[in-house]
Amino acid sequence: GLVYRHNYNPRFSLRMNGMFGMIQGDDSRSGVAWQKRRNLSFKSNVVEASAQFEFNYVEYKMGSDKFPASSYLFLGLGGFWFNPKADLNGSWVRLAPLRTEGKKYRLIQMSIPFGMGAKFNLGAKAGLAFEWSIRKTFTDYLDDVSTVYAATSDLNSAAAIALADRSIDLDTSKSNTDWQRGNSKNKDWYSFVGFAITFKLKEQEPPCWLVQ
Image (cartoon, rainbow, N blue to C red; front, top):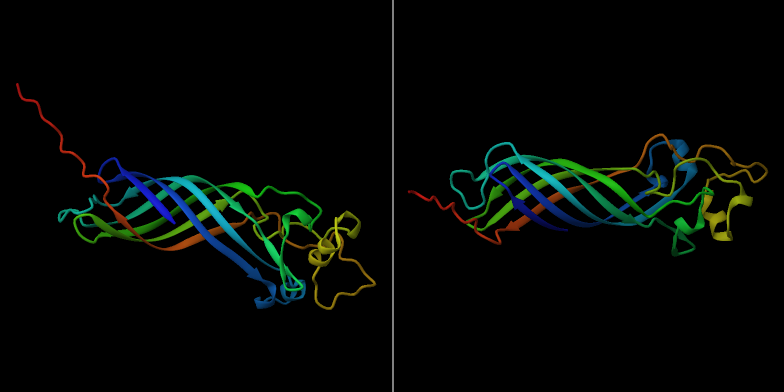
């Protein structure tokens, strides 16, 4: 990712973030029996942009021997794009157009990023930060799973039928229609863990005191 930070003072900053990552999940790796039987899997790229306010626990200034390090908290508002896919006969197929639960959802969503970190000077014009950042979202379809199994008549293609219900040991004489597929009461979350190296682009000019 990329970050641009404007420091208002040694305690408060505003930063702009651009992030790229991937999320994925696979029921076959679960330790829960019913999830193994459900047998769903997906992967999705996530592209995000956000603005965040940052608060340092102690005064921090890049290049300063007096204020060389601080832990910090941050909170902001962001937007992200995602695009869940699943493997169908060796090809990765986009799931949103298939409406595997008979519903349409938007691939651009809002998020609330927040988290904590610690940063340290690496010299006069560089710093190192370690950070854990969490994203609260307002969608339950990052993994294309939220509500119940749709009726076959509500699905729009053979690919949708194949990917909507991938249950193991499926009894073809019965239907899973309207049985639980996901949990719509809990929205999806994702997070980033990592480090950042930042560089000072402009030296803050000292105040000019006018004495009369």
